[in-house]
Image 1 (cartoon, helix red, strand yellow):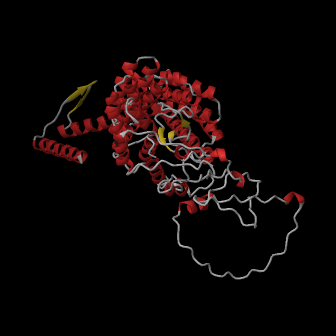
Image 2 (cartoon, rainbow, N blue to C red):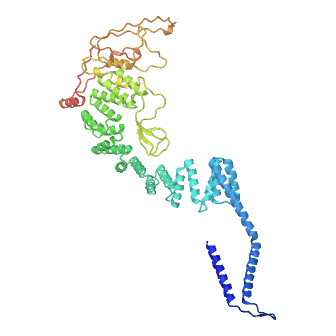
Image 3 (cartoon, helix red, strand yellow):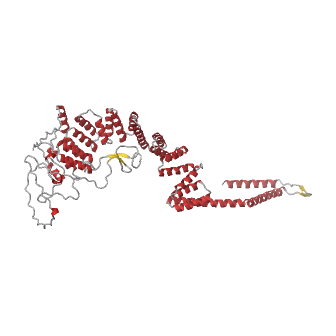
Length: 587
């Protein structure tokens, strides 16, 4: 549009000039080399214009002739550059597709056409990596460090190589150089945090984490949680170096930064107990119990009142369990406290409630061990206690510190997993179950735990109830005389726990045809087991391991601890009533 306006303006000026010359005619006299000319003024102007146009055209022709070699050279160079960038693009595609041979071929072609530009170095390095030639790739990356425009890219390549080799110290050096060049690049800041934490530079990790939150490379809740974990790691390091007061202060800071961090609460409570700050330790456990109960917290809560009597501990744990009444750890802690206080009924009741929770049947190892204590303490039944201990060896594992990345189980929390090295991957929970770990009698844990509940009161003599040992796979089930199989532990338990009912007349059964006798060899003959005589005043007891009658020494009299008047009232308030002391038959 502008060109049109300029052309119209020039044409208008030319018309005006011609019109002016027509209105003012005249002649010009020219004498040169003996010649005299008197042309009109208009003719002279036209001759000047034509001469000027001819000079311009001649100049353009001469310029075109002289500039032809350069033009041809520039055209060839542009064509070479286009072919080089096309080769570079094909090489990048081959790298993305994982075709090492094609990537190397296009890399060589791009290198010859483009005369070693920065992108050619990158393609050559990646092609070398695909071929497994790490030395060549490192050479190309180091060459990129020499050029300012490719130095940052070369540092990233060397960083990735160091990480693949597991050389964290060298990788940390590269990422620090990259951070000095571009401190606001997200991948630089996050790698600086991870490598600083992994190499034990917790101060550097905290600074990198603060910058990552500032540039929004991490969300604020995630940054706060990781900051609390780093502070807790500093507390663990201070504790390992013997700086207990500093460790206690750092654990307080970590728990304030993330109130849901269980490991911080455990360390804070443990250090408070070691420093005899029992009230502070108890408050720490009570604050975290509503969110994340654990066996470690329960043990620390018990240690936070070293002078408390067993019944006082029951009151304390009742208050603690009320903060999270439906959690397994609450019932487990109450069961253990009541067991220590000699309140057998409450201990058995809480264990019975625990195994009804989701994922708790079959009973876990700790529950089996508590049941072994309960059977031995309440009834003096050594055989039943031994059976529960055997079941504990096959029971599912108790909750512990489990790595959420690789599934490894750790005895104590640490900032990194000892197996896979993952940061902040240990969480309190049940370990993974591999294969079928169903314990004998699985699915009947509630019946086994409450089997003797009805025999605790209202009887002066209690026959021992024993749990059968687990049979070997190649051992056939024992059969008493008559050929009828024995009852399973679950059936026996439910039979013992069921209240007496009025006898009913059985319906006549249809006669079955007699089966043909099978051939029996001498090795198959087994002597019949004698039936023990049932005492008139006691219910029939169960059989011991392998169908044998338990010896008389497997039961011993265990009496409840003597309680004073005040303790008896407290026990009655907790359990409802103090059960009568069990009398044993002297026979």
